[in-house]
Image (cartoon, rainbow, N blue to C red):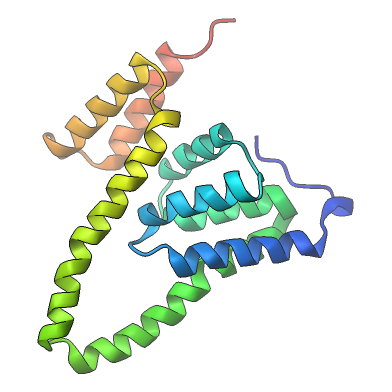
Length: 188
C-alpha cells in the first residue's frame, strides 16, 4: 500500500539516496523503461530494501496499467513511499536528468555523423542488444510474476492477444485486471 512517510521520518539522506539510486538507473540502464526495470529492482529491492520483491512487482503491474513511461511512474511510487514529495522530486530527477543530458549530447553528435558507416553499424548492433536486455528483464521478472497456473495462463493469453490479435496493451491490462478481480480474488 502506498503511504507517505511522516514528516518526522523524512531525512534528507533518504532523498539523497533516492537521487543517487535512480540516477544510477537513469545513467546505466540503456534501452528504455523496460530495460531499466532489472536495475531498478536491484536498487530498490536488493540494495536498499525499500520494498519487497512482491511489492515491487505489484507496483510495476499498477504502473503498467497507467499511461506514461514506466520508469517515471516507478520513481514516483518509490520516492513517495520512501520520502514523500521530496522523495518524488529526488527520484524523478535521478531517473530523468542523466538520460536527458545524454540524449542532448548524442543528438548533437548523431546529427553530424548520422550517415557515417560506423554510426550505422553501431545502431545495427544496438537493436539486438536491446532485445537481449528485454529478454533478460523477462527472465528476471518471470519467477515472481508467474507463480501459479492462473498467472501463466494470463501471461500467455496476454502475449497472444497482443501479438496475434494486435490488441492495444491498455485493453489487455484492463481485461487481465478484471479477470483477476472477478475470478482470482481471495475468498473471504
